[in-house]
Image (tube, rainbow, N blue to C red; front, side):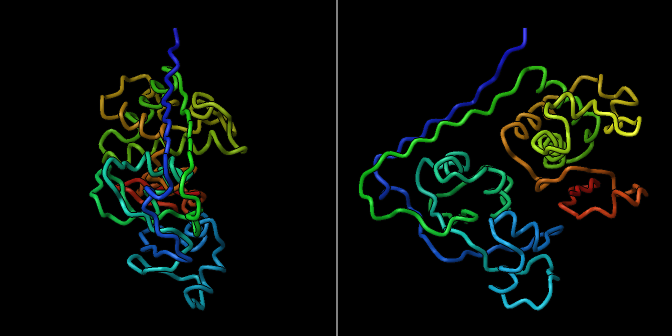
Length: 259
């Protein structure tokens, strides 16, 4: 029998005054490898031309380490916070929250400052209110199993982030109208007579997944996306010019992720 896994979170806030968030007209973002003004604009719900204007840029060239002014709200971490709770409270995906702050672990300290991407104002005039977020990430045992086995086959020797990113690519395809709408359909898709994922063609998809790959699949299913929204990935030794011609999303270990 297929068991449906549901992760529900209910956040009730008795007073908005408890939300330690400073509304600002702009926040800052530090460029990382693989970023472009287009992908940064998508993350912060703005356009690349607006970013150019706000930062007095004369062209689209950016480099890792450069600090850009972007739309956002600065949140101060308080006792009991987690990335998941903050993301649900303010309606920001945990993937976007991680990317905006270049934060891929789950550790928070009281007083840490986090950028909430795309949020420029909050209702701070109401002294008492109730905010409720009820979200469900649903997947079957079969979904988890096949995604874990793909990650095992594709990224067994790579870092944990790379493993999660491989899983995230599958989920990104499921959400995109150009691809099939289920995890198994994406993984077993054929295009031009060829399987989209090599492990399906060579049979490695049938090997059991490690505990780490299962956990990576769970993180991907719950919205963690180190691939930064990518739809394709390949080894950096690949010679396929069609893949290399696509816009870069991220590079993790030996894997290249593109749109």
